[in-house]
Image (cartoon, rainbow over the protein chains, first blue to last red):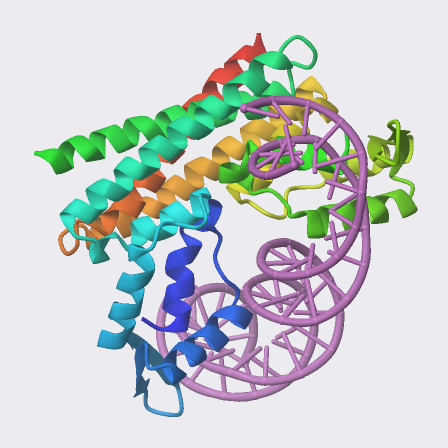
Length: 154
Length: 154
DNA sequence: GTAGACATGTAAACTGTTACATGATTTT
DNA sequence: AAAATCATGTAACAGTTTACATGTCTAC
């Protein structure tokens, strides 16, 4: 994909994982190119329009695989969605293990939220919106994980 | 609250909105103090333990109110959760309008995702996990918004 | 022909994290 | 008495955005 394409794709998910600005995206593509993790194919139109189509190389795929192999350092939603996008680089077993891991994570986060929620419930009902939201979103994610894990175990 | 307390609270939501490091949190509190948007009350223990309890000032509350008044520049989940936490600074009507606004936003984001989802569905089933996740999370959030809006309209 | 989308790129400014430094209190 | 947690803070570094700069293609 081109830098423009990557940004457009990521833009669809901006609410969940944010999307990089061109000021960080283009320099990063240059760096990856230097490191040989991606290759580029410049498709010129009639005139001087240069559309640079980047592709991942074998070395890039290896580096990605290695990254995905490591335990997730960041437990944020953003990190999860990013890995979900790269899920085709997982084997079926790896994907299952990953979703399993996410399930315990979300369950733990939800449990950690509950005491905070009930402790403040008498004072400010409005403030508890965020807690309620967190718990409900965690529930929804757990339901989604369950359904995907069921599909994978068949 | 103290800097430590603020971080602890935000830590509970780190998966949804991330929580700042002390390296950004403490300097920010110093800045707010200089600007008069917060005041500080130093509670010393027996020895030299300094626990600094920060409180929002009138000027701070005004500044916050003004911030919340403005249309949200950032449509990310993080920005939404942050505003939800500050919801007690909204009037009932403002809160309702805000949730309404969020509803159209999420509905739009979900709609924007759907074509991308179906377009690639034949190729890589694994990659579509992220799209499916996005759509299901949007559905769950819309359901949550509906329930809260119903409560507010009573 | 012009407005909007497509397309790439750089540099300054800003924001944030990481690593370090210090010390008290509480729990085992 | 050691370990974990509570508690605050700074400076170097890393990463990102914003603003700028440039030019093509497509639909009206």
